Image (cartoon, rainbow over all chains, first blue to last red; front, side, top):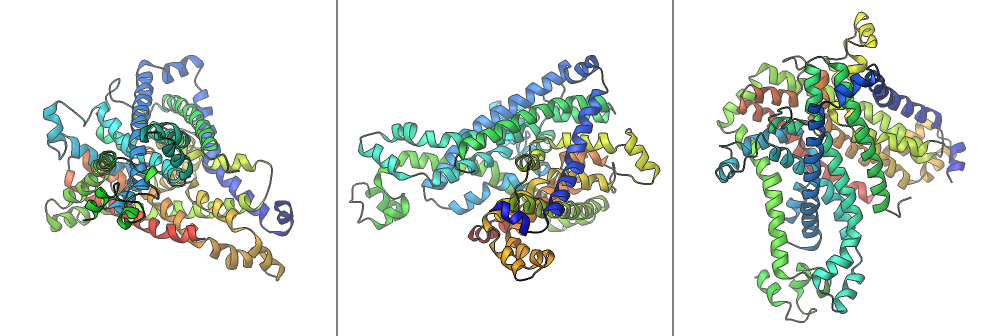
Length: 274
Length: 298
């Protein structure tokens, strides 16, 4: 059908030309320029900028916090989507709507609120500090805001799959005497694995790039609580543009790998979609 | 009352308990033990409550902690905060408009035609989503900033992009780049080209077909995309942070103003500014859920 419409429908050249031009001007050319800029440095200089002990500490912290948050989100997302699909309970519609809040709330607001809630005298900090749990200005705080920004991705990936799950297999397992846990583990869970993985990678990718909320709740100390995005900004504030670009190139490489993983995970979780 | 009948229900025969049907999905076999249900529902309340509901309540509680008068004094009495609101209201619509034009063009090309490189175009559209906002900002800084030759040349001809509103627009457009196109491509694919072919065969020209058939069919999806795109644009922080230079009263958008007030220990002022952004987010979610039904009905 498409080969027919190409001759009949108008506007192919115009719309494709416009799309490609806009994409190139806004995204492709600037990204390429950033990579080229970092090539101004010799390999040795590049390594010194992009792979210094401070930079490595920042990559590791970024990776570690995003990974822990995404792993916690797998559990939280599974529980929340399970209850939303399977049970009826008071305020269910409201809870369902609140799941989307992290997607719409500006990251600066997230950072501000979490920092204010978890400082020593804050609403929640006043209960946690006596127990020896420090959230504000620590690594724990970074993980917490990344849990917040990431968990809708897991819920929204798992929820539709769980809702459309065929009940036959589950009933058959029950009839044949499988315990509820055994059924979940061996009959239901395999169907949920692909969307869980896809939600996990989305949450993880979001966490790796996150800046706004982290900068508020972390103390941003080099080697301790400085994530890669914060390192780029502080390099920029020192007007060390090429060093900032070198760190950015490492981050870009990492995002690219993640992008490939996301598309693989999506293909795996929706085998029927084209 | 309803709880009681549900508790008795496992003993009763499945068909007779009407309440039971509302409390569990379809059959007895898919029912979890009661303690599991309570545990999971309790966890959900706790997670959403602590993670989302308490922070939302906290924003408005803090913003209004010194009374309504003080709130409006902080919000409207501060010249720089007012300018930040104004700047955000100027920058976001421009960035959204750019992405709407692109989104419609890309959706038409991708959903209606087969061409080499189509799959590549589709995945390149998603590219900005997986790039850290700070890196996005840095990229524009390197290309258009004063230390680059292009930036120098633009400056000599009277154009300042970085540390000025045009840079804010570019960074915002980059971050929100895929949001409209993503909504429109699947929608247009699902619609099919029959109505458009009919319009053309009845003698409409391309533009008449677009304004009378394509655009009206896309209107709810387009509105949905615009709402999502606008929410992200107004709240964008990382990319804008890098290109703005954060000059109070000049290049501070509302999210940047929140940070500045926070750093100046004006917590109440920061929360007053944050409450406006939170309200935008809540209105976005309400609009989104209203539109979702329309979009999915087709």
